Length: 137
Image (cartoon, rainbow, N blue to C red; front, side, top):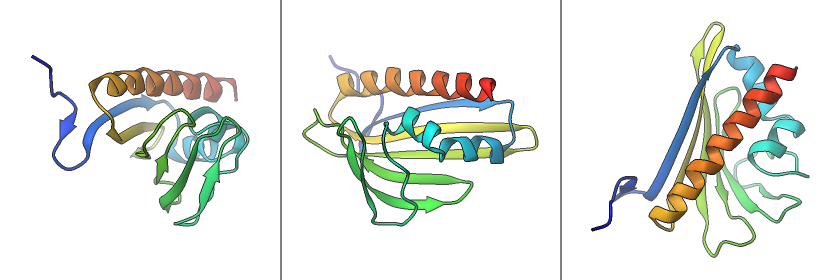
């Protein structure tokens, strides 16, 4: 019997990874949308577009389109690595106040349980890399 944990009727297979960081939301946001931050979570070689409908392509071939961009709060986009045959949707969102901010990565429209687990590991690694980069600033 296969597990259906992480599968919904609305968005198919999905995964969420979050971490509360000891930084103000503005500090985390400014890093995430910087070229250095974008290289960590989206891919190298691209500036993050801020207009809905704008397309992007990273140096490693990941392509997509901005679905929404709310300054200081969230970005939602389609995400398709070069070796995938389907799009997924990724949302990066911040919440919190004061000196603590929760960073959330949420990905929808994954192909199945195996891809979901691969992406869980991917976003956990991305989160660790963001934490390390912020600590070095």
